[in-house]
Amino acid sequence: MSSVILDQPAEEQTAAVTQPKKSKKREEREQILAKFHKENLHWGNVDWVVLIWMAGIHIGAVAALFFISWQAIVTCLVLHWATASIGICLGYHRYLSHKSFKLRAPAEFFVLLCGVLSGEGSPLTWAATHRLHHQKSDKHGDPHSPFEGNWWSHLLWLFVYRDKELNDKFADHYIPDFKNRPMIQFFEKTYPLWLIGSGFAMYGIGYAMGGNFMGWSMLLWGLCARMAFVYNSTWFVNSATHLWGYRNYETTDQSKNLWWVAIVAYGEGWHNNHHAHPSVAPAGHRKWEIDITWWSIRALRAIGMAYDVNDRIPEKNAEPEIDPEPGKNGIVVAK
Ligand SMILES: [Zn+2]
Ligand SMILES: [Zn+2]
Image 1: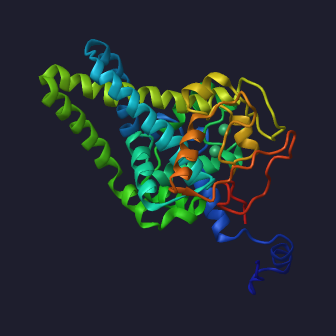
Image 2 (image 1 turned 60 degrees about the vertical axis):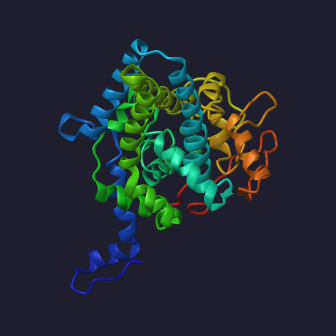
Image 3 (image 1 turned 30 degrees about the horizontal axis):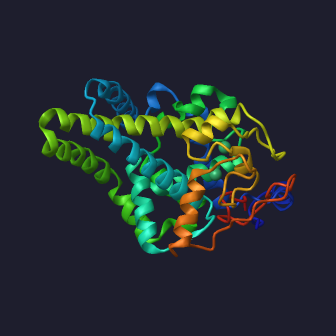
């Protein structure tokens, strides 16, 4: 609500009445969102921790070719599925960002732990960034639209530095529904420890199995190669599925359904379906649109660990979901 300020000149008072002042909350939100624009990527504002981490993981993935063992490759594949499909697709994306279903506490703990071990960031920052992507999709302010550059959408957007205070405020605005949950806060605070701990665990388990070579093999395949594959699969959802593929729904963004991303990203490649109906748990809406992550959600429901699952596949040509409540399915309505 605007208020007339008594010592202002009459014409300014009139302007204040006819053009309501932006609410403080909205002003703060706009300041936060400005930090996600592409212009913020320059050498004076690089997140060196993320840059060095990403370089290290990709160098480690190449080094893994010199430390091949079948035990490490099997570990890599199992952890790839657990962290990408269960942690990111099921946990961070469909559960946290879009609330497509609810989880009982033991399943929630496991799913969030898998998400943390993916190395894709803490739960709140990931989910808040994704909700912003849905809100601004392919418009200025989308954190990773390929229409601002293919490499920007694939990975360069990750290298913009944003401090903890800003990330906290960002979560206040974009994921208030989960922000104060104790389990989420636990993972927010301990996030780096899990990553460092998992690196030591990989080497330690390998060393116990077969000495130094096996230690490096497990570390390089179980952590570096696995994370490099998962990162690039997720990044293809941001880049490729807004560029290539077919559309089942006329959404206001450029999202597409792309079969090969659906394979490498466990169902998330049916991205046009998802943008049209973000609150629907299955991402595949046609018979041939196989969605492996949906199988895991059904399994959790069958054992009573997932409930209130939104499994309503929309009618063909159904209107896309619009203007949902804040936090309902990940599109925040400006107030
Ligand atoms: Zn998208
Ligand atoms: Zn989404």
